[in-house]
Amino acid sequence: MEPQKIVVIGSSNTDMVIKSEKLPAPGETVLGGTFLMNPGGKGANQAVAIARLGGKVSFICKTGKDLFAQRATEGYRQEGINTDFILQDTESPSGIALITVNAEGENCIVVAPGANNTLTPADIELSRKEIESADLLIMQLEIPLETVIAAARIAHDHGAKVILNPAPAPRKPLPDELLAITDILIPNRGEAGILAGIEVSDWESAEKAARILHERGTKNILITLGSLGSLCFDGTEFSRIGAFKVQPVDTTAAGDTFCGALCVALSEGQSLAQAARFASYVASISVTRLGAQSSVPYRREIDERQVALQQ
Image (tube, rainbow, N blue to C red; front, top):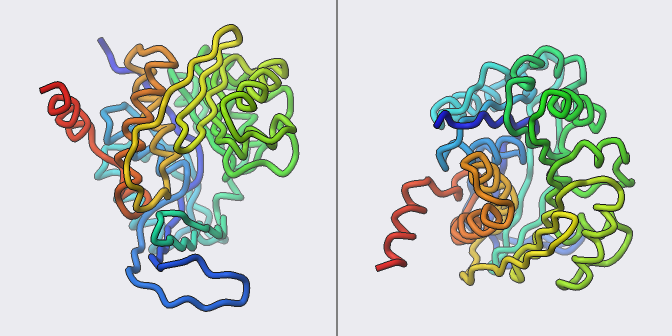
């Protein structure tokens, strides 16, 4: 069976990470420990996760024309990602994220988007044929919303499954047009609450939010709930997927790892609930490691662990 083509459109950043005992309060200076500088960005993280888990993936993004871009793009090639559709902006720098991680694995992040903010619908037209030939398209919200909508229209019109991870949380409701052409919406509890206009804190409130989002047009909703697990809703039935219990070290990119793993499982013919369980397992491994893309496991690790659990 020919592997399905997955296209990721999104952000490419360089993450500068400091591990410290606590997250600083406003005006406070905290002496930290380990410093890491790694490629990141939600789009890039998801593309790397897909590639490492055996998916066939192309990445569409825009970087600056600088050393950060060179280092990141070469890294994507080494991962086996198709980089033919990475564009460069000669006037804007590549995106940068400053990340602080505390002893419990919680993080706070500030992003300077740079060239990510200059990825336009006109740029998407340059990659139209690649999007038209995709089986799955996944996007996030670290690029302009009009660009997300333009790409979703192309994918939807050509029969691709459109997957949207609405992160970071939008400041205003997403257009109904976008929700109507989204096959799977993957918010976390905070994002689901903002999109649905209610507080999401448990299974019951997550179910309520999923119904609200479904009524607005989205076919399938998958809400990630941290240590609780994730909730799937196909418009008729709910599936509660419990989380795998681990001791977290760093939750950076756990959501991106989840999304990438979900795409791979869907591309292999698994149902949404089955894919969510696989994604949850993969993400549970990523949170036990420091960093964004550096925390994403390879498929061989997943297979070896599953074999060991069955013995």
